[in-house]
Image (tube, rainbow, N blue to C red):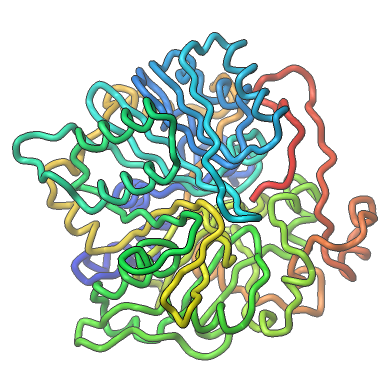
Length: 518
């Protein structure tokens, strides 16, 4: 393994050891991964690049937009109690039943949250979902943008591996550019939500008032609709393609392998996966002027990361963990997919028992990464989009949101005057001090730990179909798997089911019936 720091930023590549072992994700990328602290190998020491959700969404908040597919309001307010005193809280959600929407309002009223807006964005396409997961937080000093992969429910933020990125942005000055690319992306996304008039005006005003020129990422947006003309390459996998097409990378990334790691699998066909989607992720230029191109044929060039039956069975949740990785057998077992399956790792970070709800995509060569995507996008046409009309139209069903890390952005950030800006300097100092304490000294809801999910070595353990450890998880098997032992699991894929209920009155526990998490 190369030594950490051996690749300079202007080489357009990151050493894996930089962001897995040496904290580059915290210091340079601000990328984290959620999982329960008690799963770490050393229970008295928090893993590298770790923090709790309440350490990101905290402080004196003037205005907050919380975007998510699922929202357990009682749990959220116990995990992030400072939300109760926020000037206004706007919940943008994907819940679609009156009782779950009503529960959000009831919990907020019970907690004394006075200024609440609850909004469900319109879903114009059948079977589409609102799946984006983010926070936009206004402070007196500036604006914080958070993009992550966890539903706002107890099990997601305590029992699973998740990803989170955030960055703070100052108010504009006379030296600030009138507009930046990140600002355009954020405004586009917020407009797509069709917020109530007052909230929409507030959101756009905040964007226009803040300087995003130091952004370390691009936003990767999916919004429902039929996109053509100038919008064709604005969303979904074509947005990834357009961003990569203007980047230059070292020549050794030519035909380098691609990784797609996700927690839900759509109904795919071979042409879409291996030509359309893989083609978009294969874009990019070499430093010598050539194109990166697709990797080698088969699993040497494209790897799909998915938990196995044994991973689910041995997880901290047991068979219940299968609820967060929905994959019908008819989708997982398609013959053309079988060579691409690779086993979920997690051992280097003590996360082998925290099932992955994180979604990540990358291109690597040896121990170097060319680029990295953290997103709510699972591997599906509904999330990433599918080309129609001979490639002139992109059809997307669902709302999704992600961030794309590029070394060129990081190199720019390192020389930017706002590179060290934070909205909450005192709180950050306090949090760093608290990280020296043992978990037993903490109070409040169970902490969530954030850190990179796995190394490439762990991500590329190829699954063997001859035993349980190599059987890709599906969700169509008999419910008998929930009570049978390992012999049963070795013969059949895991069933998706969820039977847990609220235990006791602890507000850090789930208070609403959990359902399939995506």
